[in-house]
Structure formats: C-alpha cells, structure tokens
Image (tube, rainbow, N blue to C red):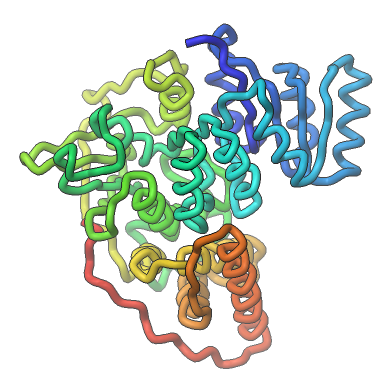
Length: 412
C-alpha cells in the first residue's frame, strides 16, 4: 500500500481525534491533506500545526479568517476555506483517495456524498448519510465506483466477521442473520420512574466508550443502536427481520454474524475506536492501532440479554421507521436530533425524547427517498414538528399521545 492522501471531515470530534492518533503512528502510509471542523477553531489550529495539511475548513467565514491569520503567523502554509463549498472541495481533491466522514448529523451529508460521487474510499462514521438517504448513497457508491467502509465499531465488526468475498448478498455467503451488540448505556438497569430525573451529565457518562454528547445520549436511549440497524440494512443488504440487537454490557463483542450452518462469528476487542479506524484505514491489511490486546482472563465474563423495549422505545421506533421505509428514517433521525438537543439544553426530560420522536413519526407523512433533496425536505419538516411539540409542552398544552408504532420483536 502506497501513501494515502486523507481528508478528515470532522477532525476535532471523537472520531477525528482517534483517527489522527492512528494516522500519526503511520506517517509513511498516510498523509493528511485536509482537516475540517464546524467551529472548534483552537483544536483545528493545533491539529494543523501538528499535521501540516494543505487545507483546513470551518463552517463560518469570520472564524476561517481568524484561523487563517493564526496559521500564517505560525508559519503554517495551509489554505483555509469555509462553508459547504469548502467542505465539498476538500472531499473531492484529486490528491485525496481516502475521506474519513466523521461529521455528526445532517451537516455531513453533502461532503460525504460529494466524496462518494468522486469515487473516493469513504470511511463512514456519519450515521445520517445512510439513515437519511441510504438509497441515494448506496446507488452513488455503485454508480461511481466508490468504496464504503464503516468505522463505527459495530458495522466494522460485521465487516470483519463476513467473508472477504461478500458482495452484498447475505445468502450467497451463507449468512442467516446479523447481530448488533449494544452496551445498554448508563441506564440499562434503571427503573422507568428513575429516568424522569436523569441529567444530561448522567446521560453522557457512558460506562465503556468516550464519545461526543449527542452520541452519548443516543446510546443512553438506544437510538444509537436503532440508527445502526438502519445503517446495517443499507451496508449489508439485510432486511430488518435479519438484523438483531442484544445487550452486551462489557462492550467486548462488538457484533456478530450468524451463519446457516450454526456458526456464529464475532469480533472481539477493547472498547476503543482506534481499532475499527485502523482496520478501515489499512483495509484489507492490518496495522498497529495503539490499542492494547484483549486479555479475556481479565474480562472474566461476557453477558448477553434482550433489550427492554419499554425502557428503550427509541429502538422500537427505529425498527418501525425502517419497516415503513421511504423518508421515515429521515423523519426519525431529525426528530431525534431535535429531541436530544432539547434534552441537553434542559428543555425536556429524558423520557420525552422517545415521546417526541413517536409523535413526529405519527404526524409527518413519508415520500419516496429517491433524492437527497427529498430526504432533506423530510428532515426539515420533522424538525419543525419536533420544535412545535416542544413549544406546546412548554406552554402546557395537552399533547395527545400518538397511536404507538408496533412491530414484532426481531431484535434478539
């Protein structure tokens, strides 16, 4: 493998910083061409001084100018861009063959799709790309000859557990089912009435992983796992009834693949994002990640049990949105983003996250998700309905409970 030019979309977040830690160990293999951040200017400046990329990008023009001046004074010859055009430009540079898509939320859609359409090797951590517009993204991957490698731990584990010859047909390689593991988050043993008093700090205190605040809350509600179910559908061509979820508190088994002969192949490792990032960066080779080897004698035990859908309604809603199809997953994702932001801001209690999402899914109609614009329209409408729901609750207006979305339990 020669030196790979890399653009890192979202370099200051948890995915970005872990990716740079792996890249720094292999300077002969990887060259950082571009780094991007939404608004974390100081962190981006420090990364630019260390890795000396050709380009840096921020969302805001004024902030980009400030960073440009700071880097110039520090002697760093880095072109600083801003806005959507800047993000898309660095995702499609000819000297870049690998794009790490680590921007959280809908903001990552356009640059990630631009990288796919440029035929890049895309290391995907942005869940929203496939949740909101899976049909669009996977069609673009095929049309433009891009390579899509997941770097979240669960889908990366499935990639490792599937045969190398897998090309999107589970039956052709004898797969019966994919099983995603979930830690259960910090509240897996909490009684339902205790969740009313949960604080943002408690929800963000994940027992095993160090993640951003939004993803940490998603883990606490298990919406993170629900979104991963939708991702797995698109990444591996799996219908929802062939994607299971089990609670595994130790976060040692990252996911499993069940085969028709009765075998189950699992990927195990420390709960450290550097492992899946290193695997995707070097695929199909393996490189040092800086992660300590797993010592099962110290782990001692591995536990598994079915998820509680009363405690975790978000997982149920994600399965329902996948079954409904079209733009329903985009509606689910948008409502969740608004709900999580409101919870983190102290505007709603923790249990209201699921209630808000269920209400918005009941209110917003779905349409064919054939274009990115259709997904974004659904996203916009869902956000409007979600904010209206929050405003009505603030005003003390009685909120009619939507008819619950029911489906048979295919999680475990």
